[in-house]
Length: 178
Image (cartoon, rainbow, N blue to C red; front, side, top):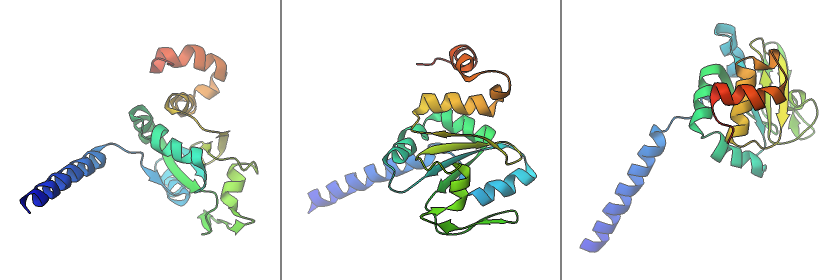
């Protein structure tokens, strides 16, 4: 009986320590599309939208690997309002006076953001006035994603081409590309 309680105590201690470690790790401050729209009315920022589905395997990999990277978390939380949008969400989404409904398997907000190209995951970038900058489809590892969020987040997209930014500007300003 003593062994049982000792094993139980060790297990609970390890579980509690692991839970505390996960709770103390920084995370992206995700919000809904409606919350982001409200937030830019008070404090304008760019918006990054992770458009995903529950069945998308690469979406889950991005959740586990890309969105947990400390550099990604820090930059997103500093420069963007981050939105998670399930493209198959059945609940209506209301942005200002416009209502987006579920139709033909998708919420029409997702359809509009992806410009009808239903590919998952897709990360959509909006400017401070809720205007489209660009959707970027496909899985991105932490480095690729960091390059893209800095390109849009620090307005490098207004100054020069992506290839030059990725090759010359990013390594000098943000660190290695490896």
